[in-house]
Length: 387
Image (cartoon, rainbow, N blue to C red; front, side, top):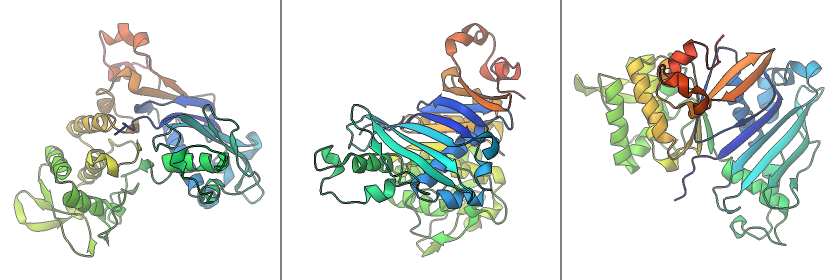
Protein backbone atom coordinates (compact mmCIF):
# COMPACT_ATOMS: atom_id res chain seq x y z
CA UNK A 1 0.00 0.00 0.00
CA UNK A 2 1.35 3.40 -1.01
CA UNK A 3 2.17 5.71 1.88
CA UNK A 4 -0.13 8.73 1.87
CA UNK A 5 2.07 11.04 3.91
CA UNK A 6 2.26 14.09 1.68
CA UNK A 7 -1.17 14.74 0.21
CA UNK A 8 -0.90 18.55 0.14
CA UNK A 9 2.26 19.79 -1.57
CA UNK A 10 1.59 23.48 -1.10
CA UNK A 11 -1.13 26.02 -0.49
CA UNK A 12 -1.07 29.48 -2.06
CA UNK A 13 -3.34 32.12 -0.51
CA UNK A 14 -4.09 35.70 -1.48
CA UNK A 15 -6.16 38.14 0.58
CA UNK A 16 -7.24 35.53 3.12
CA UNK A 17 -7.59 37.03 6.60
CA UNK A 18 -4.09 38.17 7.71
CA UNK A 19 -2.44 36.43 4.76
CA UNK A 20 -1.87 38.92 1.94
CA UNK A 21 -0.03 36.73 -0.59
CA UNK A 22 1.96 33.66 0.31
CA UNK A 23 2.79 30.18 -0.91
CA UNK A 24 3.55 27.62 1.82
CA UNK A 25 5.30 24.37 0.91
CA UNK A 26 4.23 21.42 3.06
CA UNK A 27 5.89 18.07 3.77
CA UNK A 28 4.76 15.05 5.76
CA UNK A 29 5.40 16.82 9.09
CA UNK A 30 4.76 20.54 9.59
CA UNK A 31 5.02 22.34 12.94
CA UNK A 32 3.80 25.94 12.92
CA UNK A 33 5.27 28.20 15.62
CA UNK A 34 4.54 31.86 16.21
CA UNK A 35 3.16 34.44 18.59
CA UNK A 36 -0.52 34.97 19.35
CA UNK A 37 -2.19 36.67 16.40
CA UNK A 38 0.63 35.91 13.99
CA UNK A 39 -1.56 33.91 11.61
CA UNK A 40 -1.13 30.24 12.56
CA UNK A 41 -4.83 29.71 13.19
CA UNK A 42 -5.69 31.65 10.04
CA UNK A 43 -3.71 29.18 7.95
CA UNK A 44 -5.45 26.25 9.64
CA UNK A 45 -8.83 27.88 9.08
CA UNK A 46 -8.04 28.07 5.34
CA UNK A 47 -8.31 24.27 5.21
CA UNK A 48 -11.69 24.46 6.95
CA UNK A 49 -12.70 27.08 4.38
CA UNK A 50 -11.68 24.70 1.58
CA UNK A 51 -13.56 21.81 3.20
CA UNK A 52 -16.71 23.92 3.16
CA UNK A 53 -16.17 24.70 -0.51
CA UNK A 54 -16.01 21.00 -1.36
CA UNK A 55 -19.10 20.21 0.70
CA UNK A 56 -21.04 23.08 -0.96
CA UNK A 57 -21.51 24.78 2.41
CA UNK A 58 -19.37 27.84 1.74
CA UNK A 59 -22.07 30.51 1.89
CA UNK A 60 -23.58 29.29 5.17
CA UNK A 61 -20.07 28.98 6.61
CA UNK A 62 -19.19 32.55 5.61
CA UNK A 63 -22.45 34.03 6.91
CA UNK A 64 -22.19 32.14 10.21
CA UNK A 65 -18.74 33.67 10.79
CA UNK A 66 -19.45 37.30 10.07
CA UNK A 67 -19.65 37.58 6.29
CA UNK A 68 -17.02 38.21 3.66
CA UNK A 69 -15.21 40.96 5.56
CA UNK A 70 -14.23 38.39 8.19
CA UNK A 71 -12.34 36.43 5.51
CA UNK A 72 -10.90 39.10 3.23
CA UNK A 73 -7.57 40.71 4.10
CA UNK A 74 -8.68 43.87 5.97
CA UNK A 75 -12.14 43.58 4.44
CA UNK A 76 -13.52 44.31 1.00
CA UNK A 77 -12.25 47.91 1.07
CA UNK A 78 -8.69 46.59 1.01
CA UNK A 79 -9.21 43.37 -0.98
CA UNK A 80 -11.20 43.00 -4.18
CA UNK A 81 -11.13 39.19 -4.16
CA UNK A 82 -9.85 36.08 -2.40
CA UNK A 83 -7.71 33.54 -4.24
CA UNK A 84 -6.22 30.21 -3.32
CA UNK A 85 -4.41 27.46 -5.14
CA UNK A 86 -3.72 24.10 -3.53
CA UNK A 87 -1.47 21.44 -5.05
CA UNK A 88 -2.31 17.83 -4.24
CA UNK A 89 -0.83 14.42 -4.93
CA UNK A 90 -3.22 11.86 -6.40
CA UNK A 91 -3.37 8.78 -4.16
CA UNK A 92 -6.63 7.27 -5.38
CA UNK A 93 -5.17 6.01 -8.64
CA UNK A 94 -7.23 7.89 -11.19
CA UNK A 95 -4.31 10.13 -12.14
CA UNK A 96 -1.57 7.54 -11.68
CA UNK A 97 0.08 9.35 -8.77
CA UNK A 98 0.30 12.70 -10.57
CA UNK A 99 0.26 16.18 -9.07
CA UNK A 100 -2.76 18.37 -9.68
CA UNK A 101 -3.94 21.80 -8.58
CA UNK A 102 -7.30 23.11 -7.51
CA UNK A 103 -7.68 26.89 -7.63
CA UNK A 104 -10.52 29.33 -7.13
CA UNK A 105 -11.03 33.06 -7.22
CA UNK A 106 -13.86 34.40 -5.07
CA UNK A 107 -15.35 37.88 -5.14
CA UNK A 108 -17.55 39.46 -2.44
CA UNK A 109 -21.16 40.30 -3.24
CA UNK A 110 -23.72 42.70 -1.80
CA UNK A 111 -25.37 39.64 -0.19
CA UNK A 112 -22.29 39.38 2.07
CA UNK A 113 -21.30 36.05 0.54
CA UNK A 114 -18.73 35.03 -2.05
CA UNK A 115 -19.27 34.28 -5.71
CA UNK A 116 -16.89 32.16 -7.77
CA UNK A 117 -15.40 34.23 -10.58
CA UNK A 118 -13.13 31.32 -11.48
CA UNK A 119 -12.74 27.66 -10.48
CA UNK A 120 -10.49 25.14 -12.17
CA UNK A 121 -8.36 22.03 -11.82
CA UNK A 122 -5.00 21.72 -13.57
CA UNK A 123 -3.52 18.24 -13.96
CA UNK A 124 0.19 17.89 -14.60
CA UNK A 125 0.89 16.85 -18.16
CA UNK A 126 -2.75 17.07 -19.23
CA UNK A 127 -4.27 19.74 -21.46
CA UNK A 128 -6.56 21.55 -21.28
CA UNK A 129 -7.17 22.41 -17.66
CA UNK A 130 -10.59 21.67 -16.18
CA UNK A 131 -12.65 24.87 -16.19
CA UNK A 132 -15.90 24.96 -14.23
CA UNK A 133 -18.82 27.36 -14.40
CA UNK A 134 -18.10 30.80 -13.00
CA UNK A 135 -20.53 33.27 -11.40
CA UNK A 136 -21.77 30.51 -9.05
CA UNK A 137 -22.24 30.83 -5.28
CA UNK A 138 -21.06 27.28 -4.54
CA UNK A 139 -18.45 25.01 -6.10
CA UNK A 140 -19.49 23.06 -9.19
CA UNK A 141 -17.15 20.14 -8.44
CA UNK A 142 -19.78 17.93 -6.83
CA UNK A 143 -22.34 18.58 -9.57
CA UNK A 144 -19.85 17.73 -12.32
CA UNK A 145 -18.50 14.68 -10.47
CA UNK A 146 -22.02 13.27 -10.07
CA UNK A 147 -22.66 13.32 -13.80
CA UNK A 148 -22.46 9.87 -15.39
CA UNK A 149 -20.42 9.38 -18.53
CA UNK A 150 -20.05 5.60 -18.47
CA UNK A 151 -16.30 5.56 -17.86
CA UNK A 152 -14.80 4.84 -14.47
CA UNK A 153 -12.22 7.34 -13.22
CA UNK A 154 -9.76 4.49 -12.66
CA UNK A 155 -9.61 4.03 -16.44
CA UNK A 156 -7.95 7.41 -16.85
CA UNK A 157 -8.72 10.00 -19.52
CA UNK A 158 -10.35 9.04 -22.78
CA UNK A 159 -12.50 10.54 -25.50
CA UNK A 160 -15.53 9.36 -23.52
CA UNK A 161 -14.38 11.03 -20.30
CA UNK A 162 -14.73 14.83 -20.29
CA UNK A 163 -11.79 16.53 -18.63
CA UNK A 164 -14.01 18.45 -16.19
CA UNK A 165 -15.55 15.24 -14.81
CA UNK A 166 -12.12 13.70 -14.41
CA UNK A 167 -10.69 16.75 -12.62
CA UNK A 168 -13.68 17.13 -10.29
CA UNK A 169 -13.40 13.51 -9.22
CA UNK A 170 -9.67 13.88 -8.65
CA UNK A 171 -10.22 16.67 -6.12
CA UNK A 172 -13.19 15.09 -4.36
CA UNK A 173 -11.67 11.60 -4.11
CA UNK A 174 -8.29 12.77 -2.85
CA UNK A 175 -9.15 15.82 -0.74
CA UNK A 176 -12.86 15.36 -0.10
CA UNK A 177 -14.62 12.64 1.90
CA UNK A 178 -12.97 13.75 5.15
CA UNK A 179 -9.47 13.15 3.77
CA UNK A 180 -8.30 16.36 5.45
CA UNK A 181 -9.29 16.47 9.12
CA UNK A 182 -9.04 19.62 11.25
CA UNK A 183 -9.19 18.81 14.97
CA UNK A 184 -9.84 21.02 18.00
CA UNK A 185 -10.27 19.18 21.30
CA UNK A 186 -10.32 22.38 23.34
CA UNK A 187 -13.91 22.22 24.60
CA UNK A 188 -13.82 20.01 27.66
CA UNK A 189 -16.45 21.78 29.80
CA UNK A 190 -19.66 20.30 31.15
CA UNK A 191 -21.39 20.60 27.77
CA UNK A 192 -18.37 19.36 25.80
CA UNK A 193 -19.15 17.37 22.62
CA UNK A 194 -16.60 14.82 23.83
CA UNK A 195 -18.91 13.93 26.75
CA UNK A 196 -21.95 13.56 24.53
CA UNK A 197 -24.09 10.41 24.23
CA UNK A 198 -24.04 9.21 20.61
CA UNK A 199 -25.32 6.39 18.45
CA UNK A 200 -23.14 3.28 18.65
CA UNK A 201 -22.61 3.28 14.88
CA UNK A 202 -21.34 6.87 14.67
CA UNK A 203 -17.85 5.66 13.83
CA UNK A 204 -17.01 6.20 10.16
CA UNK A 205 -14.44 8.90 11.01
CA UNK A 206 -13.47 10.93 14.06
CA UNK A 207 -15.23 14.29 14.13
CA UNK A 208 -13.14 17.42 14.47
CA UNK A 209 -14.45 18.25 17.96
CA UNK A 210 -14.20 14.65 19.20
CA UNK A 211 -18.00 14.35 19.57
CA UNK A 212 -18.02 10.68 18.50
CA UNK A 213 -14.88 9.58 20.34
CA UNK A 214 -16.83 6.84 22.14
CA UNK A 215 -17.99 5.37 18.82
CA UNK A 216 -14.44 5.36 17.41
CA UNK A 217 -13.08 3.66 20.54
CA UNK A 218 -15.78 1.00 20.31
CA UNK A 219 -14.98 0.34 16.63
CA UNK A 220 -11.24 0.09 17.29
CA UNK A 221 -11.93 -2.31 20.18
CA UNK A 222 -14.13 -4.51 17.96
CA UNK A 223 -12.08 -4.49 14.76
CA UNK A 224 -8.47 -3.58 15.66
CA UNK A 225 -7.59 -5.08 19.07
CA UNK A 226 -3.85 -4.50 18.66
CA UNK A 227 -4.38 -0.80 18.04
CA UNK A 228 -6.84 -0.63 20.92
CA UNK A 229 -4.25 -2.05 23.30
CA UNK A 230 -1.64 0.40 22.03
CA UNK A 231 -4.01 3.29 22.74
CA UNK A 232 -4.72 1.95 26.26
CA UNK A 233 -1.02 1.53 27.04
CA UNK A 234 -0.25 5.06 25.85
CA UNK A 235 -3.04 6.67 27.87
CA UNK A 236 -1.83 4.85 30.98
CA UNK A 237 1.54 6.60 30.59
CA UNK A 238 -0.10 10.01 30.91
CA UNK A 239 -3.28 9.51 32.97
CA UNK A 240 -2.15 7.76 36.19
CA UNK A 241 -5.57 6.50 37.32
CA UNK A 242 -6.71 5.25 33.92
CA UNK A 243 -7.20 1.48 33.56
CA UNK A 244 -9.42 0.88 30.52
CA UNK A 245 -12.46 2.10 28.63
CA UNK A 246 -15.93 0.79 29.33
CA UNK A 247 -17.15 -0.95 26.17
CA UNK A 248 -20.91 -1.31 25.83
CA UNK A 249 -22.98 -2.94 23.06
CA UNK A 250 -25.98 -0.71 23.61
CA UNK A 251 -27.59 1.41 20.90
CA UNK A 252 -26.32 4.64 22.47
CA UNK A 253 -22.95 5.05 24.17
CA UNK A 254 -20.76 7.73 25.77
CA UNK A 255 -17.15 7.94 26.87
CA UNK A 256 -16.71 5.87 30.06
CA UNK A 257 -13.63 4.47 31.78
CA UNK A 258 -12.43 2.37 34.68
CA UNK A 259 -10.23 3.84 37.39
CA UNK A 260 -7.35 1.46 38.18
CA UNK A 261 -8.05 1.90 41.88
CA UNK A 262 -11.60 0.58 41.46
CA UNK A 263 -12.08 -1.38 38.24
CA UNK A 264 -15.60 -2.47 39.13
CA UNK A 265 -17.32 0.91 38.81
CA UNK A 266 -17.62 2.73 35.42
CA UNK A 267 -16.64 6.39 35.52
CA UNK A 268 -18.06 9.03 33.18
CA UNK A 269 -15.88 11.41 31.18
CA UNK A 270 -16.81 14.18 33.65
CA UNK A 271 -14.38 12.60 36.12
CA UNK A 272 -11.42 13.14 33.80
CA UNK A 273 -9.38 16.33 33.97
CA UNK A 274 -9.41 18.62 30.94
CA UNK A 275 -5.86 17.64 30.01
CA UNK A 276 -6.61 13.92 30.41
CA UNK A 277 -9.68 14.20 28.20
CA UNK A 278 -7.75 16.05 25.48
CA UNK A 279 -4.91 13.54 25.60
CA UNK A 280 -7.34 10.62 25.21
CA UNK A 281 -8.74 12.21 22.05
CA UNK A 282 -5.25 12.88 20.70
CA UNK A 283 -4.09 9.33 21.44
CA UNK A 284 -7.11 7.82 19.67
CA UNK A 285 -6.65 10.11 16.66
CA UNK A 286 -2.90 9.59 16.26
CA UNK A 287 -2.80 5.85 17.07
CA UNK A 288 -5.89 4.60 15.25
CA UNK A 289 -5.34 2.42 12.13
CA UNK A 290 -4.39 4.29 8.96
CA UNK A 291 -7.63 3.40 7.23
CA UNK A 292 -9.59 5.28 9.91
CA UNK A 293 -7.38 8.38 9.81
CA UNK A 294 -7.68 11.25 7.35
CA UNK A 295 -4.81 11.54 4.87
CA UNK A 296 -3.91 14.92 6.38
CA UNK A 297 -4.28 15.50 10.13
CA UNK A 298 -4.39 19.14 11.28
CA UNK A 299 -4.40 20.01 14.99
CA UNK A 300 -4.40 23.50 16.49
CA UNK A 301 -2.34 23.74 19.71
CA UNK A 302 -2.63 20.10 20.86
CA UNK A 303 -0.48 20.80 23.92
CA UNK A 304 -3.17 22.83 25.73
CA UNK A 305 -3.64 21.63 29.30
CA UNK A 306 -0.98 18.91 29.07
CA UNK A 307 1.86 18.31 31.52
CA UNK A 308 5.37 18.59 29.97
CA UNK A 309 5.84 14.81 30.26
CA UNK A 310 2.55 14.29 28.40
CA UNK A 311 3.71 16.72 25.70
CA UNK A 312 6.83 14.60 25.22
CA UNK A 313 4.66 11.50 24.72
CA UNK A 314 2.44 13.49 22.37
CA UNK A 315 5.39 14.48 20.21
CA UNK A 316 6.20 10.80 19.72
CA UNK A 317 2.62 10.13 18.63
CA UNK A 318 2.79 13.01 16.14
CA UNK A 319 6.01 11.70 14.60
CA UNK A 320 4.60 8.19 14.43
CA UNK A 321 1.48 9.39 12.61
CA UNK A 322 3.62 11.40 10.18
CA UNK A 323 5.27 8.19 8.98
CA UNK A 324 2.06 7.31 7.14
CA UNK A 325 -0.01 10.48 7.17
CA UNK A 326 0.61 14.16 6.60
CA UNK A 327 0.48 16.08 9.89
CA UNK A 328 0.15 19.85 10.38
CA UNK A 329 0.39 21.18 13.95
CA UNK A 330 0.34 24.70 15.37
CA UNK A 331 1.96 25.20 18.76
CA UNK A 332 3.31 27.69 21.25
CA UNK A 333 4.99 25.03 23.36
CA UNK A 334 8.81 24.99 23.62
CA UNK A 335 8.51 21.48 25.11
CA UNK A 336 6.76 20.22 21.99
CA UNK A 337 9.16 22.08 19.70
CA UNK A 338 12.17 20.43 21.39
CA UNK A 339 11.19 17.05 19.96
CA UNK A 340 11.30 18.04 16.29
CA UNK A 341 13.92 18.90 13.68
CA UNK A 342 14.49 22.33 12.10
CA UNK A 343 13.22 21.11 8.71
CA UNK A 344 9.85 20.29 10.34
CA UNK A 345 9.32 23.87 11.51
CA UNK A 346 7.43 26.70 9.81
CA UNK A 347 7.88 30.05 11.60
CA UNK A 348 4.93 32.45 11.44
CA UNK A 349 5.51 36.17 11.96
CA UNK A 350 3.28 39.17 11.45
CA UNK A 351 5.05 42.15 9.94
CA UNK A 352 3.38 45.32 8.67
CA UNK A 353 -0.04 43.70 9.26
CA UNK A 354 0.83 40.72 7.06
CA UNK A 355 1.37 37.09 8.15
CA UNK A 356 4.64 35.68 6.84
CA UNK A 357 5.65 32.00 6.79
CA UNK A 358 9.25 30.80 6.76
CA UNK A 359 10.50 27.21 6.63
CA UNK A 360 13.58 26.69 8.81
CA UNK A 361 16.81 25.59 7.17
CA UNK A 362 19.00 23.29 9.25
CA UNK A 363 22.19 24.48 7.52
CA UNK A 364 21.46 28.10 8.44
CA UNK A 365 21.19 27.08 12.10
CA UNK A 366 24.02 24.52 12.22
CA UNK A 367 26.43 26.73 14.17
CA UNK A 368 23.79 27.76 16.71
CA UNK A 369 22.56 24.17 17.17
CA UNK A 370 25.97 23.07 18.44
CA UNK A 371 25.30 25.07 21.61
CA UNK A 372 21.54 25.56 21.81
CA UNK A 373 18.38 23.58 21.08
CA UNK A 374 15.40 24.85 19.08
CA UNK A 375 13.35 26.09 22.08
CA UNK A 376 16.34 28.09 23.31
CA UNK A 377 16.85 29.63 19.88
CA UNK A 378 13.14 30.46 19.81
CA UNK A 379 13.33 32.12 23.22
CA UNK A 380 16.41 34.06 22.04
CA UNK A 381 14.34 35.26 19.04
CA UNK A 382 16.81 33.79 16.56
CA UNK A 383 14.11 31.81 14.78
CA UNK A 384 11.42 34.50 14.67
CA UNK A 385 7.89 33.74 15.73
CA UNK A 386 8.07 35.92 18.84
CA UNK A 387 5.84 38.88 19.83
